[in-house]
Image (cartoon, rainbow, N blue to C red; front, top):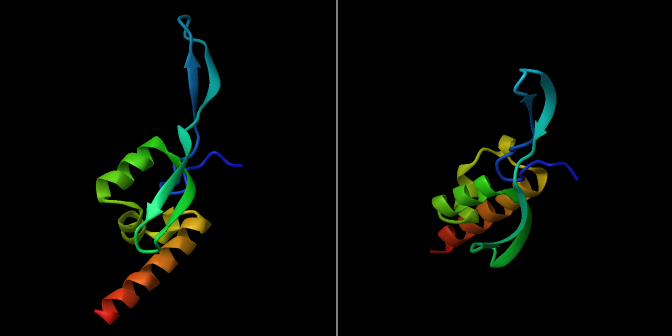
Length: 99
């Protein structure tokens, strides 16, 4: 399983450990990924995703998973999230037509 956030595409970064003697060795910075269950109000069900804590804060700031997926470009999302985005947009369009 890759260490990439499914919502923000935040992945690992490479940098250097720098000692007091200024010796540099390569190291990896990993994102803080959490397995989270988020509720989709449009679909009426919960969805399990692997999300960074930064991405989780962003989702809560925007107003939920549905709003985040609708506003985010599909190229930044994982395949599962793109599929979810399609389902949500269809459901939202169907409810606006009925009203």
